[in-house]
Length: 263
Image (tube, rainbow, N blue to C red; front, side, top):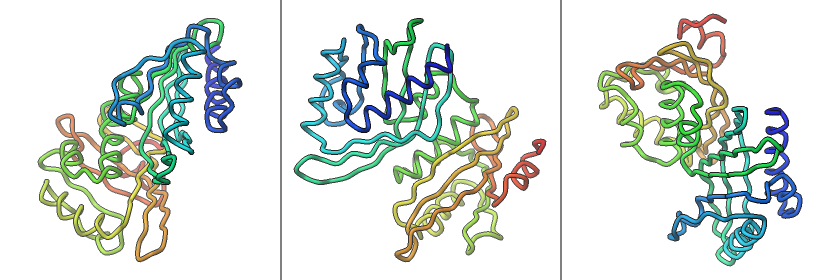
């Protein structure tokens, strides 16, 4: 049944993106409860929309504010009677034309009849994974680190790293340098990451064993007016529950060897 749930989730997202309300409702239980995060972000209160009429109302409300809203998920996890997915939300304000993009998490619960009975959404994608019980401590820390980069949140990034952290970079000017401690993090953030405009770091996949693992990721940014898209593999280890070491590699085999994991 769970594979059918994933397929229903994918149909729902496709229908949501193309604005096909009736197709979306066809996979939602008549007693559906949907807690959207966008109203809170816009200064409203947490609202739970119930039933098909409630979902129609929610979509009308969103369409009054946005003339474009699109979800794109990079990970979808089958959790039996639940599906959790993380990716990005793109929106454009109606009238203003202002566009923005942010991390996004989606948690859907299914009844035995294969219909979605509850949907919860999050702008903190890591929160969705934690609530669903997906991934280890390492996975949570790496994803939170990526979200801090995307948000330009240096303090949030530092909160995920050990005081005695050591790491290296793939950027040419810093490839032979090891950065150490929080002072090193700040130096890297300013001089290396700061060379890019609008960096966006996406974690595509994780392979883990205890306190170590490898994350396949993609960095998209602008450098000297040119868009740069770099797929890379990050080998990482925890120290006292925080990221204590990491290094980036151009191939998965190199990263697995550095992390001490079997190829």
